[in-house]
Image 1: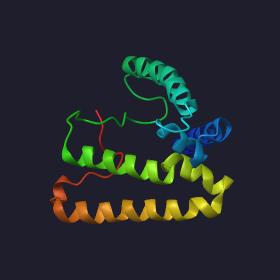
Image 2 (image 1 turned 60 degrees about the horizontal axis):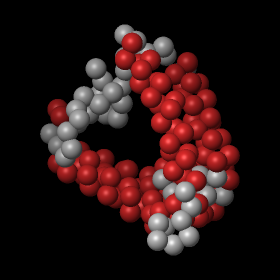
Image 3 (image 1 turned 60 degrees about the vertical axis):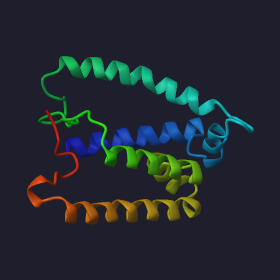
Image 4 (image 1 turned 135 degrees about the vertical axis):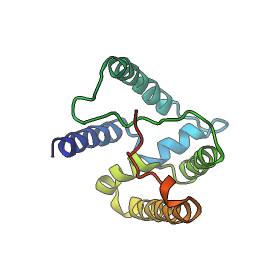
Length: 152
């Protein structure tokens, strides 16, 4: 229950930050990606600002044996670049450029602009489901890891 409440609080804080900064507006995102047109650098400052608390969080995490609200850390156990990671990054970038949304702002937009965000979120969930179906068929059952099951 404690983890769920903390996740809800973190998500609400993230969503509020996206809404306040205007980063849930697809036009702003497309403006950032349009480097040869009417470029809008504000997203660069939001991303840069996010590096500061993340850097602090990584420093704190490195000194902790266990997290404050969980039994163990859920960190990737690999740093290799494979075709799944690169392909996923390419698909993410294409979707971000076309729609001007990624998962966080899309969920935020369900509250701010539900009509336009609903189609994106529906397509995103369908893509996640399709990925699970494809990977469960191509990976032996003993190798499939549930989301969040990786850790130190």
